[in-house]
Image (tube, rainbow, N blue to C red; front, side):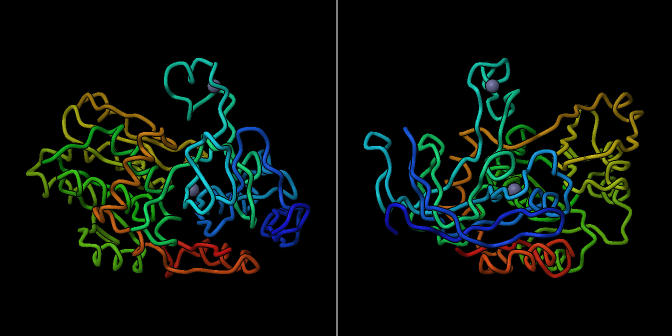
Length: 341
Ligand SMILES: [Zn+2]
Ligand SMILES: [Zn+2]
C-alpha cells in the first residue's frame, strides 16, 4: 500500500445488492488511525440493510460493516497504538454534550452515528477511524474470534444491564449469535440458562455448546413453570423479534423479575401487560454497549470463558458478499458469516 493507492471495498447499491470495486486508500485525519481490515462479521443489522430496511440511514454507495477486526498501519504517536497492533473498533460516533452523553450513555447519544450504518464502516481494505475508538485484541484470540468481539460486547452489555448473578435462572428467547452469546455470558456468571429456539441447526449448535434448549414444539411458559417449581425465571431476554416470543415473555418471569428487550422490533406487537402489573415486573431495553462492556467481552474471550471461534460458521471473500448475505438471510445451517479481507 502506498499513499495515493487504491483498495478494494464493498458498496451498498440498494436492496439485495452490494457491489465491489475500488476506492482511494483513505488518508487518516487528526486523531485517526489507519487500519488494514482483516475480518468483518455480518449480523442482523447488516441483513436489515441488505433488505433495504435502513435506506433512510445507509446511503447508496455506502460502505457497511460494524463488526470489525483489523491491524494498525499507523496511528497518532500518543494514542497507545502502533503499527501491527491487532484491534477491534467500537463503531460509535457521539457528540459528548447531549443529555445522554452527559448521563454516561454516549452509546445512546441523541445524535448517535454508527460506523458501518450511518457513516462508512469496515468492508474495505483500509479504514481510517478515530484512535479513541480502538481496543487492543490479545494474541491468544485468533482472527475469526476477534470478529465476534463486537456481538459479545452487545451480550456483556445486555447481561450487565439485566443484573444477572450467580444462581439466577435465565430464559433466553432466540438462539442466534446474540442470544447464544447472552446465554454463554450468563452461564459464565453462574446462572442457570435455557434457550428457546426453533431452528434445528441452531438447536444442535446450542446443545454442542452445552446450553439446554426449549423447542421447537415445546410450550415455553409451561417449561419455565416446570423448571422453576411454578415460580418463574428471574430474567428473560427477548432476542427474537417474533410476536410469539413477545406474547410469552412476560408470562415466564417471577414476581419482581426482569424482562430485557434486546431484539430490534420495527413494528408494534401485542404484549401481555397483565403480568407486568400482577407480578410487578421490570422491563427495559438493551442496545449497543459502553466501553466497559467491550473490555469485559475481550476479557471473557481472551480467557476462553466464552469460546467465540465456535460461532463462526463460514468465512467468505469480499467479492461474495451478496451470497453471504443471502445465506445468512435464509437462516438455515448458519450461525455467523464473516468476510475475510
Ligand atoms: Zn452487529
Ligand atoms: Zn450526545
